[in-house]
Image (cartoon, rainbow, N blue to C red; front, top):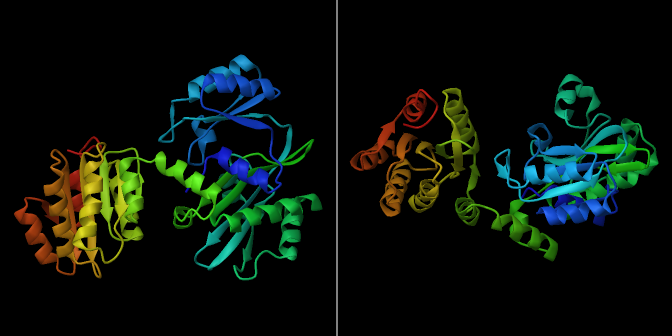
Length: 379
């Protein structure tokens, strides 16, 4: 669950992490009230559930109230990075002397938490770390032992700051643990003429944990998150599917994250535009495939669907039954469906699909070519 920045800001405030003065607005009247309380110049930030908005025009600076209102008016209702902007965060513009970076995330390969810290933060932090990888400090934290004081001191020294930062490093770790986060990020953690502030914040909470609604605050965040999802996204969550909507018109259904990602890459490489992808995982029954396929068929933005399944613990005949069942029940017409089946019971699966008049391929490249036209759209 990717939180809005204003939600992340509220959480950090509860843990005593310094933040700039700001307020949230969903219309011009609320924006006017915010501007009365906050001193100029102003920073107007579009609230969307993704990063990188600064490079997409989602963060603007205004020196006068009229300019700030114009930016708010422009942002509200606009689409940035595939998301509709329904709220903006209006904040004071701090006098930033230096930007640093601090985050906690999970390294699944190491089976460990990892603390990332750099004396270089801001909008181009990723490019900076590519050019100067030595500037990014990685501190691995055993989940059973937790954050130790020597780790905190190491981070403070690396960032070139005094011990006043130590409390922020500890507090951010507490947020990471107590909210069961996949990511807690402050970028930049800004050094200003008034002290250190967490100026831009990003928090991602594990969906499985959030669904349990263990506390009233997380329950509220989860309810708000789910209510903003499309019908297809809610359906995916309720059935435990990994489902992501994109901006193209080709739907991709695969089994396994690696296979699904590789299929998306090939679609893009051949000029197609993925509009959504869904991973059914391993060992999916015909019933589960039917639900997954129905979900993609309901997506009105998809003009064609590419199914790429390699059978192992997943049986190809079960996949075929699910596909045919979904098409018959949905009554959806006009979507081109191309299937590539390979593996356990593939011949049985191909026979089921052939009887239903569905295109079946053995080769992935040929199946992708079938769904991608010369102008990059489905035929």
